[in-house]
Image 1: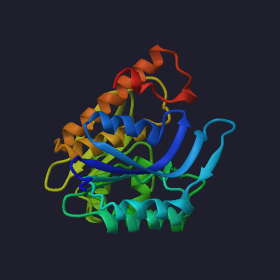
Image 2: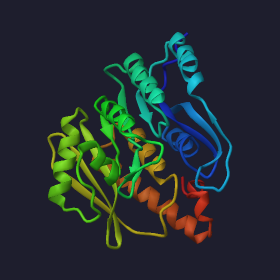
Image 3: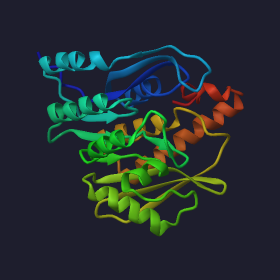
Length: 271
């Protein structure tokens, strides 16, 4: 029986029941692009950790048995997309997954979720950052924010950064192995900018007018569109524009509906 007649993305991220982030937003967006989304949950949350209380179940010890069943089904993937990874063991499992499932027709997209606003997340230590760096080396496309791009390149973080400095950082990331990188969420006065670079091409800015406040899940939405477009052979620069404009529309609708900040963006209204 052939289970590989349709494009598929293996999506490795946590599952959050409420709050619109991770698999909860990525699965419907990837599916809307006519790609089958096959999730591997790393953890299961009742709601995201930005709330004052939540339930969490770590799925690490089940991940390898889960993946073994896919191997036995001889599943093949057009893409492998990774999000937040909560431990070194999870990062190791993803390394092994890529080694087992990536072939010449598989695009690997890594969102190196390690930190924001100039600081690593409290769950990350230097050893985990180093291990995630080695995962980035296996990627075709990387989607770090500015903090994560600085961590990956051992560059001192600063909010106001020049195009020349960004170009050095982006080229350094490409030197590790990926062919495309987009540094996301760069604050520039009244704009939110993304700096994208593809091997053999000139770097380009994609700027969108800043709307509302920063909300959870927008990075997951952005990466899911980049991953889907890559599988569908969309030009990288056009894909970054597509993702940026979609996120903006989501935020605009969310603000119009007066959705609480904790509840993410109501992408359902504009998908």
